[in-house]
Length: 367
Image (cartoon, rainbow, N blue to C red; front, side):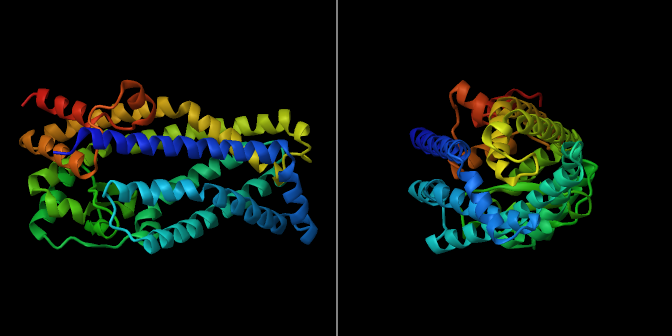
């Protein structure tokens, strides 16, 4: 049984570091805006080229360099120091640094493409750019969810087809009963980096697959693995993926609308030369960051309701609730879960009901 105080301190420290990093990001964006440094960066970029796309690329490099260097200490504390302090990581410092470089390369490439499209859209469709961008970005999010299991995740983790044929057939039969088709069952080499355990139904359409971490396979019984996967299949049965895509679509349209209004109302105050002036990027990021913070409790509340639905499906789909309860106990121990967070902490930060609530729900669920 995990130490409740230890788990509480782990999550408390993680929240403090996350909030501190968030405040640093806000402060940096405000400094770039109110000091005019973002305009200095734009002038520097335009000094080397008058081509908008190339000047934007130079600006993004400078902007990214500043923000990444400023946030590096918190990235290290959250991603490496904290996990090692609580003995949850198997990753070396070199391995962690390599993952940061990979993440920066992947995220930076996608970010540059997104920003190049955004400012090109503003230039070509000065009145309706925000609608065009919302539609294209939503399509991009769906495409990314489809391609992530086969292109992006293998950059960071190793996957291989699960060799336990009896377990594979058992899980495929469970997925067929849920009415979903999967491309196979894969073992996820998570132990190379972490002691935590996880399972997922990844991908969309022709890339959907069952993924089980090797840490889960090593320490869970087959009926417990079935219980964990039944929960993931519950999201498919209740169409939660479609619901979350819809919710993300609403948030995306709202975000771009608010960005347009912010550029119209505040752009002249900061000295921007119209919406296509990429010096306004800190203002765009500020609007997006604040909006994300404001809707976080509502999104998490909706997510917890979906998780409860998925738990109920899992309890109906498996022969006994005992494997579900024991799997929750093991996940709590391996992942150092906070069993009973403060109600306000759970309301704001948690996308899942607490482990204690999930276990109590299962124990009361009709046999």
